Length: 242
Image 1 (cartoon, rainbow, N blue to C red):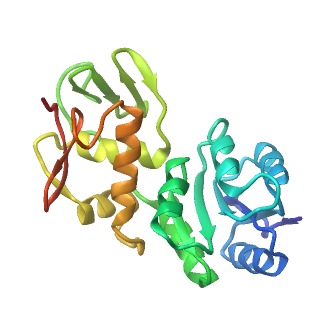
Image 2: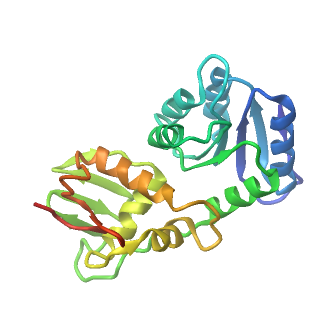
Image 3: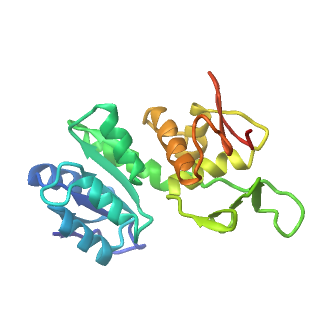
């Protein structure tokens, strides 16, 4: 089912995936009233099919779908789309949150929730600032290098020993926020402000999850800390470790 807004500038596109018709209708209605073009899907297969055809800017995705569950939908979605993903879950424990975000989701909302708050969070996510490169002289001013790690801020590309590393938008933004300030330790709240924007209402745990996932993709670890270093009691910084 599709929802169309009034004519004007091309609206942002949202795909709502939930097998509860009443909830899906409510979320879709709030998004539509906020100016989004909205489509809905009731299961994982339909969600992936619609995502390929609709090319959404954001997907609001329930975990507990029939057939292909939300985590697998998110995993497959990440193979062809760079859209933002907000997971809806009735299970609030930390394991579900970590697993959900590790497959490429950007945020999560626990049921029951306010549709108005959800839309506000989606809006903040979509307009959040992108990290601006630090101006330095030379033809590779927008490339930050940390050992064999290269972060191209302009192209939004990361490579390790010459091999590409595929990061989601949020993962790249967290890495870039640290990369442009190589000598600075950034607190979780500072990273939230930089990456998610000043109007963000999520919790600081999101930062830890995305740092963890970037480390995994770089072949790093909390113990080794070759590229992303934890400063205990403060936050994170970029830099080579032992």
